[in-house]
Length: 303
Image (cartoon, rainbow, N blue to C red; front, side):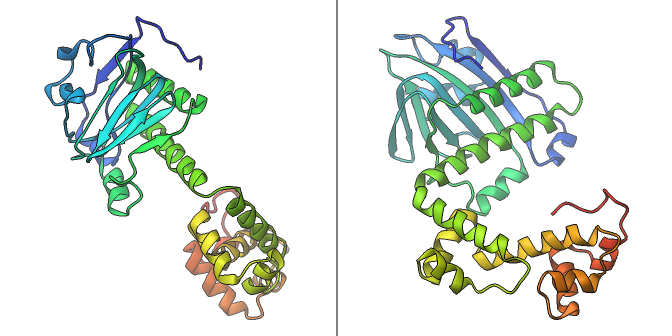
């Protein structure tokens, strides 16, 4: 998607939604983009927006979530007393009840994209600490992927075909995932990534036997405690949890082969006790190895 500074660029919708939409747990409430030329009152055409949204330049709180992405220009964003310099590629994450204001600099103006949303799904992300008022500003840089997602959101809300909210909800989640993963990559530089990738390789190539995480750490050249710390921070699981997940995934593929028994699958994966293997498999997949094996091909649940 080409990044434009079209002075006529202005699209926005405030969307009605039904009880059926709310049951999905993800509801888009508004979406739009606007080019704000230098030395222009902000927000332009202020009275075209609902009252709760108008005081963005002075200070407001919202009853919903919003993602705001600036593709061109510069300005200021302040939330809960913390001030941030907004530049091309800045993304703002506004949470319900977050006191904030933002506006472009008079000399530069900016091009702004936004999407608003509500739902139990996002409330759960806040309750789990995945979304937080402590992390509301992301310096992503000019991002073709983010702009393409906004373009798809706008296409959906323009036409509003049946169940369009489901499609828009998945696109909103993609934006959130991109912002959060970018922040994690930024916070954990290449050293952590290299350590994690080396550990993954050693785990995957030895997944058919019992593995000693201390030995993996020694092979990489760090302590086991340091490996656990880096690996969990980067992947949200410990090396041993990753090792078990790899084994279970391999077990699923083995059991889909007609000529492989449960006992042989356990043996090939380094399990000395077939019954322990069966209990572990059932706990991780929600289904026993024997039931998995007899599922019609293509119907096995995805891990």
